[in-house]
Image (cartoon, rainbow over all chains, first blue to last red; front, side, top):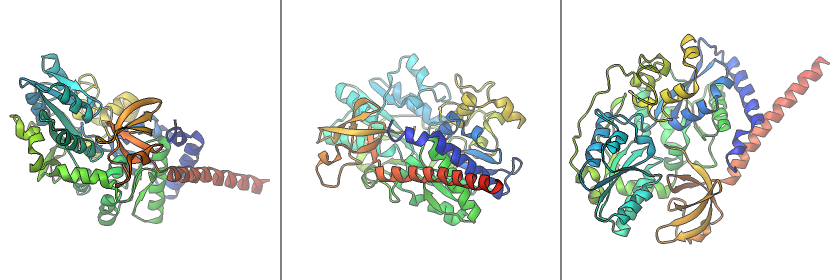
Length: 375
Length: 93
């Protein structure tokens, strides 16, 4: 598989692991005082567990799993809004598969479907638009969520709906932006992170420049990374080299896909359809200024938020959930009081257990919680 | 959610909707190529390009030269280590 297998070469991985180990030693890192690197993106979290990268690396390097899993940070009130829309007569509610099992305050979309709501999983927002064309008598709503990676696809789908004159299609916009959230995280007083693995596919859209503030204002190295195992190892190696030289800069390991200024056509589509919200509520992290987008007035007729009645209530997470502490890297998933007990992938209590990109689900699937707890 | 798969643009299927047939791991699928379309130029210029496909959209072209440079660097790292090991070995002899 071109552009996949080349970045899984075991020889390259061994060379990187050796050099990472030597650099950690020179830095004086130990298992008790490890270098802590946050991978921002849930896709990286998943890859780190899937390829057992932690087992390849010395204990003097620790991954802190970041907030970059859009399904995980979606507040319960927003799921309730989805269900309220899906239950209205004549509505076909379409969504990516990831969002189906996210618990709302009473149920998930999957449960709403079992109770009769017409909820359909799609691979692409364009599939939702096709459903709208095929069902002119129904209202088809697409649940738009995700970071900047996914924003161009929903923006372009809305522009396509306009071009094709599809009047029964609308978008329930829950897109979020990563940089304000990283800033809020970096302002957390007890945060102990030495460097960041930057989200490669967000940077593919917005460029690597929007991450400059992390190096400039907070003095932390950032390396924008691809998603194959050697991409992640090489990014770690680049971060450690910066730490060794006492530098903090934004570098890209993923030059095959990321340009410093991002993708102009994608950015233009985003800017045409969306504008910043004053604030957006994140599950586990609370309200963060300018961290979400909504649809511009010009596209109001495609905006499900304007077209459908919904409760729009803030719902607090179950008190026993510690998703927020996990998201900030203050505790490991296995240290949460309900991990693996009342909160499991089949019956998730907290959002981090829902998506395979969530830190808790990844821990549950791949890591050994007993070994982790003893460590 | 943010993942993507490399694919190669094979043909343009609907120029007005900016749709192309893309071979993704041997599976042919219609994909929107608005984000990788050449500025003002004909869409056909994209045919043969490698792109990253995410939720039915080609999000970025894959720069084959940059991919080669990354692999070259990793290869050189392995070589340098082997050389250093041989030097150490030689010093002991």
